[in-house]
Image (tube, rainbow, N blue to C red; front, side):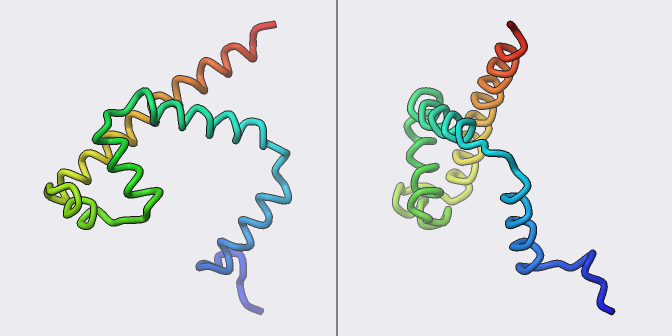
Length: 107
């Protein structure tokens, strides 16, 4: 009998995704709030250069070498720019989540 408990790969990931969706409660309200906050953070809290690099990387699917070629900078500069933008977004979203949770505890 094969041991499926420790199976790896795409099949396991797909099984876990299905299981997670089935077991999770409806969190669409929280997901929508997170998306709104992410968009607001992208507009207000990251620099224009970071926003441009993040958009090209995540929305357009370009790799760092391609982004660097388009913007005329080295790929390591793009890598640092993207990482700094991600850290800034994480801080903004974490701060927003902490405020949200603090306000939920108050009657």
